[in-house]
Length: 220
Length: 62
Image 1 (tube, rainbow over the protein chains, first blue to last red):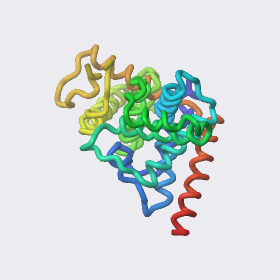
Image 2: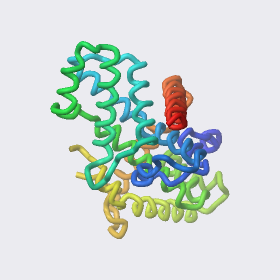
Image 3: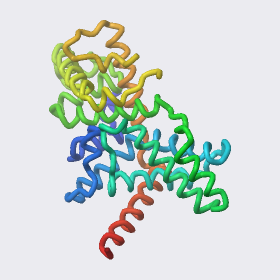
Image 4: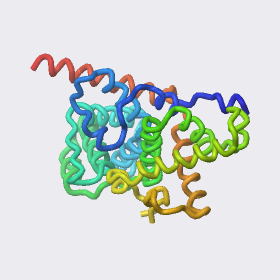
């Protein structure tokens, strides 16, 4: 158990870095950042959080424009990397014009079509028409919702004291019984319980921010 | 229906709601508690870095 308690996870490691805040509205403002170091940390964290939904969006776009085909790995990687470069170099996301997930899906479709045009130019007219007229590919709400919740967790990490987060992470995120965490940290059970409660309340305060309330889908 | 984590923090949580929240958080955490050193992520990171260099180079030329 102690090794699990001490284990550093990728998400936790990234959370420990001196990163800028990660709420969606702040991510969307990171285009042309003056601070290169923050910029690089930001897109790497963004990749970690949103890789899975982006990958699904790229695969859905490929399937749509190729009659149900399954994309090669290189295709998905190329589209995902292009979307990230788009966001961090010429981001045009405007919350008042729609949801961030739809913006991501639009970018994924556009970059998928760009790539298909290069590899299969004879079909480009059809893709051009479908890009503008066709319905958006089906998206996996579960993957996107998990990415959003993980973003909230990352924001919580930046908001509360390190010790609070460490206790919260062990009890609520890793499922380690509170009594064992108390023993491990040589704290009383009530300190652990109170810390978990305070951290959860802080997370709920983060969750009521409009960008999260607007973006989150649950079974719809 | 939204997950109870999105309820106002002023509203008390029922035991079921707290359990749902714990499940939601654990699922999201588990999803991202996976290696970022996997070949796919590394490959995407390399591609992003290459493309950012291209963009920087084009910006410099313009």
